[in-house]
Length: 407
Image 1 (cartoon, rainbow, N blue to C red):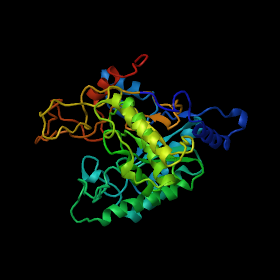
Image 2 (cartoon, rainbow, N blue to C red):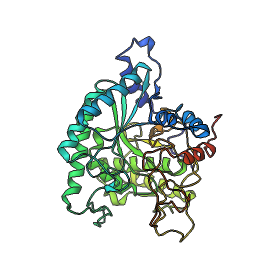
Image 3 (cartoon, rainbow, N blue to C red):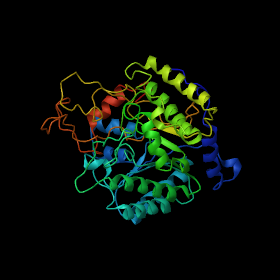
Image 4 (spheres, rainbow, N blue to C red):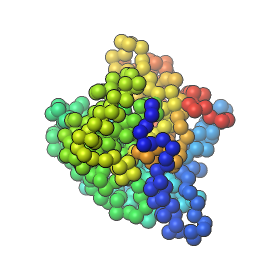
């Protein structure tokens, strides 16, 4: 799909900001365009140390590519030490680390990746430790996957409660989630060389208006933008237009006073299953900018970073009626690696393509509506969330799109 005003243009301001942060620590002549950090102590390297044969080879192969470092547990002192170690080694390598902060209270609505800080105060203390560990060095921070997509006791724009309604909580839990994210943004945005991205969900999830208003409420104005497709599989053909629509919707709401419910989406006027129809949504955004007498300013609007770690084959569509809950996001079969991680996207709405979900790590025990413990689609019991899944790693490499040059 053609992307108006997007193709062939790298995100110049994003790269310039990263270059400026490196210039603090080295003479100007020594500073080169930064690359993403390849961590020789990554969880993928650790997994390789426990494996043998072809599975070990696959893990070592994937470890050659930059992927995110997830910080999800521990005290403020522990996360401070972990973050300091990663960003220090990245700086020494003249590379930019990607840190995932994943410790918000009641994360994942107590499902496969349950956990998080005990309360808001503990969470902000933990974020403070992360900030101290980063200091004045350069880093990309992915702030709380699912943090805006799965909010306890949250109402949609139509006033309906969403599915995450934990016992003992109430509607105040949704307000606390926004306070927690705003506090985290305030702490991290005070750092001079950090690029913060909030949860923008993905093209198979929320409509642009729904996520735009959540991003605004979480203080995306103080962040670089939003992340998309984390631990998900939507193809570039779907996720890149969605990035543009979310950015445009934020601009129309904040600059033009548009009701976010009026933001066109992948569902209307487009038809979700037919990407050829998505040009209708592009045209609808054009009309709204004209109606409100606004001009697009993609270089100044909020940008996306996109997780391409597993989207080379797009999403999985299970056989109709086979499963009570197919859990299409959970270790789906036949997926492949997507674009290699890069800070040069070629798109004015996209700052980077990243491997945020570490490829080869399991999504958890995918039961697909059955009693388990075996995943009925794969006929095996999947490893717990975050643990190495050798069969999936092999699939991702074999089915990479674009194909990998060599293994």
